[in-house]
Image (tube, rainbow, N blue to C red; front, side):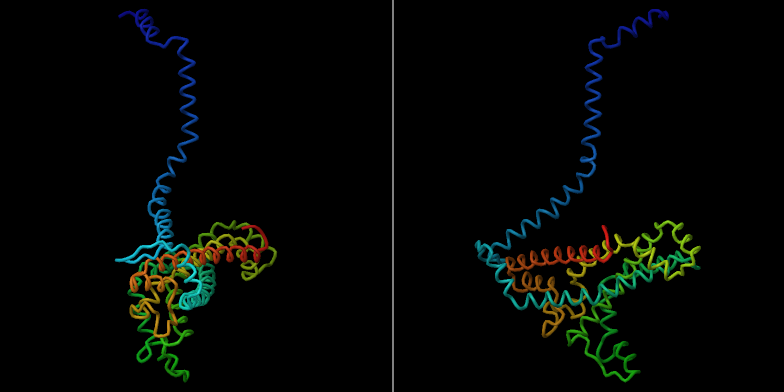
Length: 324
């Protein structure tokens, strides 16, 4: 085929001039749809999974909470009766008091220690990577193993803690028998497990602070302590708010540590001295098989966590003196 013939054939294969604007409009429409809808398509798997495993169980739990729901037996609609019973239940409020007390005793020292540990790890030192990996060792340790070890450490007769306190003339303490002592023992267990995790979050935030600020402060004669209070802490305020909210959520959902500390007793001791809200919920669901009441307790826990997180956010934002 000659060159002129090939040119004529190629021109014959081209779309007619009247079809070209239509094709351009179609391509432009597809491009606009791609820009507009593709982000929603990319994030849709998360929302689909959340709807299946998050939103639906929550709504179903609310439906169960409106019924007298037993494992085998009646499932009668009772409206808000379960919620009224929860609000007047002294055992529920005892579990709320225990949970809030252990949350305060555990979280405040935990975040302070994490902040100091992150500040130390942010300096140049030998074996820096190994030390940073070491603070995550409690995270990869089995919760059951941690609880068993700490239960032995806080044992009344043969525990290491009582043995060391005996050097200073302190009598043996039955850590699981009293409210304050059981709170302290469980809080130490929680702090040992989560302090390193929060420290690494603070460390990542510290390393994002521009070094020019520290260099300028050093030229002006500011000490390391002064730099920490005037530069590091203000720049870490959003991260501190984040860790406080996450700690609030985890603290009010405390379950495994007190359960294993009490050798699997859902009541949390003979006097319910360290029973948390989640333990009380499980006791009603799987001990008394009253799923309607347990679902009401779970929704009350959800409201408490929501209010606690909001109060933490507002307080830390006000202390910081500005927007988070």
